[in-house]
Length: 135
Image 1 (cartoon, rainbow, N blue to C red):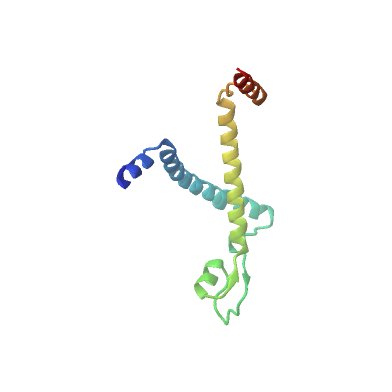
Image 2 (tube, rainbow, N blue to C red):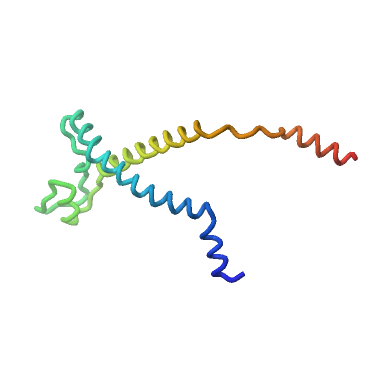
């Protein structure tokens, strides 16, 4: 079998196509979760914590030397070394929300799936093999 034929067989496998669809849908879903976090949840959290905007929380590691370091975007543009811990907090919240939503989806799908047919136990199979060998 040529490499081209092998590649065609590989691509046409159901799990590869399912993975491709999952990646595309996952990218769109990730954008929705990011918007939910940045545009809805983080402002609410900021309101509860007294107006704190986590996206602009950072720690300067270098000397700003008169450069504008009032926002995270300004610090990035200035080239001063910094730790953007607010962005990390936002990313962690994004991840937790996405993981929880995926958990809920998988949980619901598992409830809708019929239970797998119970087959013979391991002991039953071993007993059957033993009996077949005795014959």
